[in-house]
Amino acid sequence: MVEFSNRAAFVLVLVSGIVIPGVLNYYASVILGQQMLGRVVWTTGYAAMILVVWYQWLRPLDFTGPEREPEEAERKVKD
Image 1 (cartoon, rainbow, N blue to C red):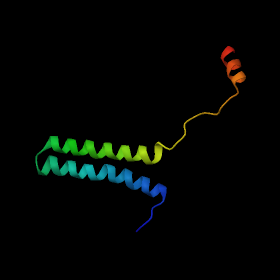
Image 2 (cartoon, rainbow, N blue to C red):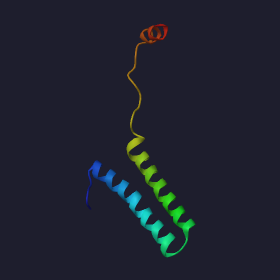
Image 3 (cartoon, rainbow, N blue to C red):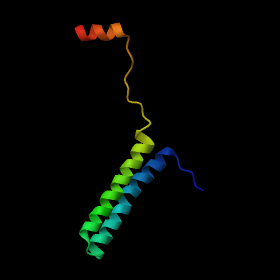
Image 4 (cartoon, rainbow, N blue to C red):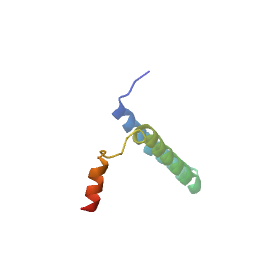
């Protein structure tokens, strides 16, 4: 099996999360004449891609700032 680097996997998820639902949207809307089905397919595919990106790459990030001593924090508030 082919192993991808983290960056390559991220790009593959982004591209497939945009291209595949877009092609299916086109097929459902233009070829089949089902615009609502195309919208549902596009929305579902795009939302799934966002959830995968969040779960794999954004959720593990730690967005906390540096910790300060309590006295320093009180002094900053008073100034």
